[in-house]
Image 1 (cartoon, helix red, strand yellow):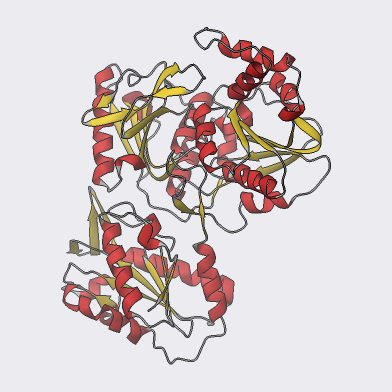
Image 2: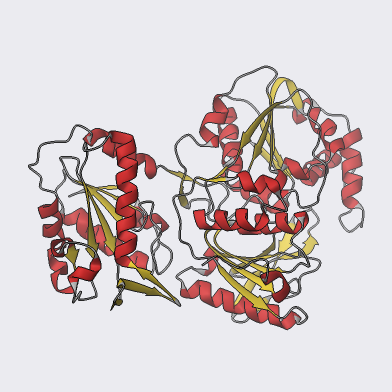
Length: 550
């Protein structure tokens, strides 16, 4: 029985192409000898086409000798054209031979850089379990490296012929395994869609959550300026875990209530988690000043009470973490400072590009500043799109780098008539239908309004076509907890969804006269919530500035 990495793939729900790849993975596990290792990306297969850390290849099989075979699986119908063998995805065609050749070239380049020229062995194999390849010459591989429908029962024997078990072991064999295992280093993602904290995603080695915690200085005051998807929220959770492990008290404070509600689910036992106004509420109640949440100025009153309230020892912490710091106001800093014990550590996490309220950054004189510009969450083509569209209006975006293993997610842009509210509703319904057709489950989808709750045509809706919407009603219960409608498709505003993410994001009601800095920041926030697929529903006038490069 072969060794599979990752080894918990059987617990991952899959449909469509993912299910077919799971079948192949089960076959490889059962039929290949124990001396073979199969690295795979089944965790990330969510569309009718595959998302793989190995480019177009779905599996990387390593022989006992350390030689590598990249296997690209194409289930379903293919077309043989004068330009080569192609796979059709909705309205687009992908040239199978060109993309597999590109994957092999990329892996050769990366292996050469890592191990040296001529020190390794790597080949490709095309597996088409449902199609008969009539003209093998157009597939771009030798006939013996193509396993189509008539030969599918021979898949394992073809692999063993390509990777003999009795070859001399390559000197780089151990390094090959370390290299591929690093590519598949998995960890729970704290910023995943609410209720999906167990979703597995890739965190590349040396990420923010790992190395930032190694810094040491006194007093510990660290301002982390990190872009979306750089791992700020994961860092916050790890810092809380470190505190819990050493018997210290930790407090996490963010701006958005939905993010605080999510962090509560993944924070270690004993850590205190709240958004800023929740914290104000708790302290106000502690000093006998229970707020009236029906009052129009309740939040301003809470801020004032907190700023003036005496702070008892039970409200002092060894570690204070502020997340979404770009949304905090200057007076809040002094109020929070009273909660940090002498010698305590204070982390301040922020992203200026997510400053949707256009507030001036708070002053933190004397603090150490750490900057992280790598986005590990968004597919590479989504980040390229964001850089291209918002880089002029928001120059910080131009310097962002991608650390994601995903590419080719095929951003979708659809438009609606500017003056017709019903048009955006219909366009958004079609976007949900398209997302479902691509294999996403309803719980994988987040519909995000670019306009915010107050200006959105969706705010009063509890149903969108056949889909029940899970959305904030705008009301709070007597304890200050937000009330939500029951539903199976999440509807939120980009303001409330900051700090979170979803496999498929439908960014709707995108409308602006000009792509100025505020409009650019809103586009940045909405687009970078997507971990696998981005669908933009925009007005016709906005669409002119948002065209997707072909």
